[in-house]
Amino acid sequence: MSVVTDCLDCPLRRKPLFVPLSKEEIAFMRRFKSGEIDVPQGQDVMSQGQKSPVLQTVLSGMAVRSLLLEDGRRQVINFVFPGDLVGLHSGLMGEARHSITAVTDMTLCTFPRGRIWNLFVKQPERAYDVTWMAAVEQHFLGETIATLGQRDATERVAWALVRIWRRLVALGMERHGAVPFPFRQQDLADALGLSIVHTNRRIVALRQAKLAEISARRLVMHDHAGLSLLAHLDMDRDDVRPIL
Image: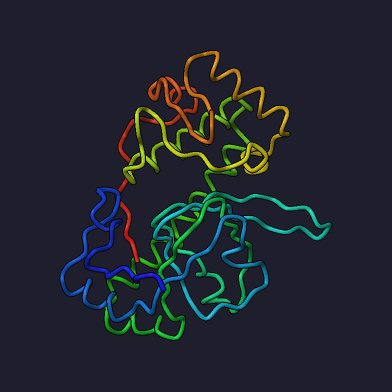
């Protein structure tokens, strides 16, 4: 039986990406957390239409968030990283509106859905954090739609790679100029509205331009500033985010 991570020893909350918690907030989170679950690579964290009694925060590992269309095709919506809150739709709306599939082994902290009201009553700041996370997810989806409409294929791929790179660097996952990249090119293509062939050609072009490359399940960054310029992203540091 694996040892459950104490909120006092959470490896994520000390990362500069996340808003620090007060002693009182940590004490509350220790009471709020009900346990952890391990999800092996390839397994669904949750399935579309599933009812879940818990909310979950990704402690480690990565996943893809996807929607099953009526004709049986799968549309990748975005990617899931450590620190992300999952299950909010299921927790508040009764059932999951999309699926989340692990692309690496994952560990997730669990929080009973029935205790959500306690956040609003006893920890309104933490309740605001949940609202903030939901708003950020909607903002990201809006930015994705803008990317599909306004960026060409090369710019779309550059935008996605910069976003993933910055998130994983902020999580302390960069080693020797590279971060893990466990996603399939098909996942990236789906998320960006491109064919797999077109996506592969754009990745090759970025490598040839000595901007970035994907090799051996790693994203290698050669020129962050140049890739950001191509993606029409500024170099300002991303805002810190709360963690549940």
